[in-house]
Length: 314
Image (spheres, rainbow, N blue to C red):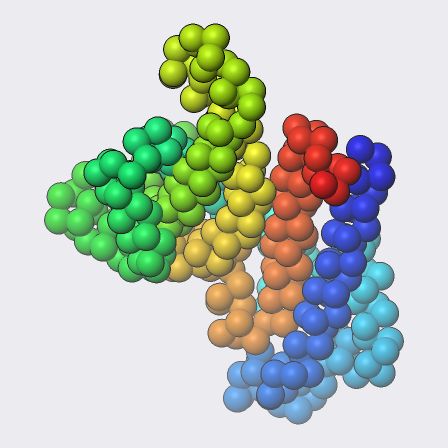
């Protein structure tokens, strides 16, 4: 397990380093002068030059990369252009809103996907199985921003059951929870189909395993066989899938935060791109990348602890 953990940690560090190189290169690949775009057309050349010096664009490229690389590893992501605040502080202010949205979306996908997958596996080749298959493909095919718009129109505008915009009153947990229902549904509904299909396929495989057949031969109740023996093994690939899914939900959160006017890192990076606020863009993307890598690392380690075959590479 120690070798497996060190191997995954090394891979995570390599991925983060490559992403840092790509983020740094973005400043030179995107056309236009970052200082001119950030300050607007009325800025003088002296003001633009002062901003270039401030964010380090006047230095040689290798010096800029080294400063960016070493500072990022120590947690210093630079200062935001417009407000001159530390980028790390700005991102960390918005991160809890996005994390609440993402994990609520995971809750939707797990709460609906796992039971649907189990039901389809138990009712294999029946009408119920075909219905679950159609539902799975349907929710996978619909983009998250389409779900967000129609959920907003139906539940907030037409029926007036749920609030339309915002993140709720600060300090009011129930109000924040109510404001989270529609955005999290838009983010997580697409992964219901993925999880249902994965659980169904894994369940069908585990239902034919030797220990399940032995339990059935001993006359154990079918419900106990399904949930205590088969699902316990079938859930392992789903954990890995959720690690990838959380990363995909981070991109879906951008649309949800824009449609529902919620704060969060998705809305933050969207606004930063429009204003060419490069320190804020690179800092936000880097934080979300590290978060994505850590979540996948955690998912791999959990699967490695639960399944010795993964640790041994079998």
